[in-house]
Length: 422
Ligand code: GDP
Ligand code: IMO
Ligand code: MG
Image (cartoon, rainbow, N blue to C red):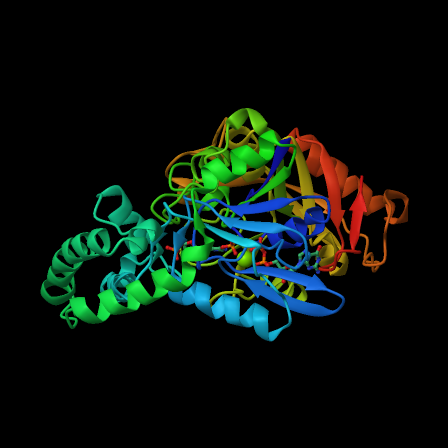
């Protein structure tokens, strides 16, 4: 019938998974469309915490079908770990997980090269999650990658794996001085995984469109965020896919006409993991206060997240490139400790105001600040707008005014119930 998209508006970790889980109660099919096991998606239900890397965050509802779309780079070992994680915690995913035959695979060699490249990059490292993401997408666009569907035909697997290993062994040995990959060992392991995953492998573009045509609802789950987009992010300090709306269409293969809503997930302050420019970053004790209060430590790598004040220019950029129809504002409860809260309303460069977020040179901008009074009251039990203190509502109104996009949800805690529908 129709599709909704949940997309990150900052540099990831905005609280996308909380909203995927929250919205999934009324959705038939949840589909990831890009990224891979670099994502760390945290869902809290009834006091229990779940962290997903590849698995769509709607898997906790017993009747939803979860799809890993063609735009995802799939690490079979990471998927296996996640399937075991679900099984051990009593979640039955049988007949509820479908994998695209066109997903490119992340193999151990991709992770080895990612890690080696980062170590060798010295001052130029990206700060990747070392999950092999950039290397696997690189093989996809240079047309030597291996796809999930290739595992189902022994001849195709043999032919494509031989070529990939031939190219990659040169890189491993000659550039990084790492051991070569043995073809037979890789082949046996991949053939075994192919047999194990075979019942789940499908043409997911056909599956999604057929179900949409038959009246199903689909929720597309973005990983990462607009600031990490390969085209619209802070290149080169980005991931290697398109988390933005265009990527949701190409990475799922749904007819774009089905997409009716694009919900931008936006933290009430900003965080970023890894390297790259961050105009509102707080390097003082306020940054540390945000990190501790917000428990801002990576769900995938455990790294401390860099923290800073809300940046309206980043959100306006996300609103434009994604065509946001509404916002979900998360973690506003974390700001309750502050007597004053700052907002970046825009940027200047060499004292000249910039009309939009620049494609490069973000590290050279100066921020134009506005300061608002805090509310210094616990808001975690608020369930409707009128429960929020006046200063909190003023802060929200100002963000919405600066973004030019209406807010649909306010999140005041990690649980499903900690949500205000505006
Ligand atoms: P994602 O990658 O965008 O799905 O976000 P992460 O799961 O990496 O990080 C968001 C973290 O914030 C998780 O630990 C969530 O449980 C938590 N969270 C989400 N929304 C809220 C909120 O409104 N308030 C608080 N205090 N925590 C939240
Ligand atoms: P979720 O879905 C935050 C960052 C890495 C690094 C850059 C490139 O949980 O929001 P990569 O391993 O993708 O090649 O690393 O991207 N990064 C994320 N930061 N949240 C994520 O995912 C991220 N996935 C990748 O830290 O800066
Ligand atoms: Mg995350």
